Length: 290
Image (tube, rainbow, N blue to C red; front, side, top):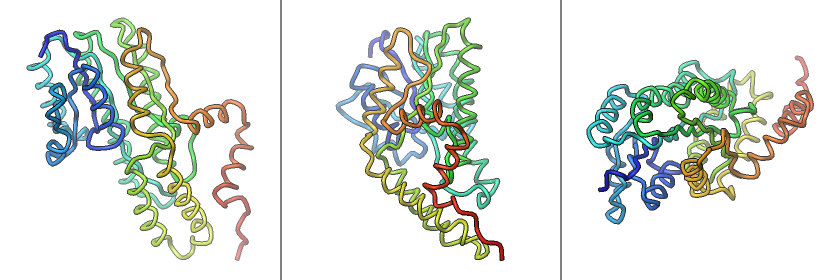
C-alpha cells in the first residue's frame, strides 16, 4: 500500500449508505477504514477484490471502540486522515408524547454525540492529513416533521455542531460539510415499519382517536420511502464529491424531496407549513371534547 494513499474513516458501514460509501471510496483508490458496529459484519464487508477496504469494529457509542480506532489510525496511517465520514445513525418514528426519554437519549447518543466524539478523536489525524469532516444529516435536519420529532431534533443539533466547527476549525483549514439526503431506499424503512406497527398497537386507549390516524399515515409515508428513487449509491457519490472538491460546499442535498423540503422551508410561512403537515397526517380537525 502506498504511503500516498489517502485514508478515510467511514462509520456505520454495515449496510445502506455507509456500505455503499465504503465500497465506492475503495474503488476510487482511497484506503477506507469501514466502521461496523458488530464483528459479525466484518466478514460481510470484506472484499478480496478491494484491498483498500478495511472493516473495523466500531460502535460509535462505545468509548473503548473509539479509543481503539484512534490507536489503529495512529499505528497504520502515518500520513493522517484525509476524511472522516460520520454516517452511523439511528431512526425512531414515534409521537413525542409516547416516546420515552431513554429512547430520545439513545437517538442523541448515536446521531449527535457520537459524531462529536468521533470528530474530537480524529482531529489530530485530520490536522496531520489536511483532512475534512463530512456529517450525514437529513432533510429532517432543518425541518422538523411530525412523528420524527426526536430524530429531527438530533439532526438539528448535529447541524449546529457542524456550523460551529466550520468556524472553529478554520485556522487549520479543516472543512466541515453536511449532507442532507431525503428518503433513501435502505433497510431502515423495514425497521421503521416494524417499530410503527408495534407502537401503533400500544397507543393508550384514551389517545387512540388522536394518534391512530397519524401512526397510519406515518406507516404509509414509510412505505413510500422504501420505494424511493434515491439509492444509497447516489448518496455515496455525493460523499465522494465532497471529498474530492477543492472547496467543498457546506451543505449537499440529495434527492428531489430533500430539495423540495429546503425550498418549502425558505418560501412557505410556518403557520401554513404546520397546516399542510397537519392535513397530511390527518391531524387538521380538532377532536371533540367528551
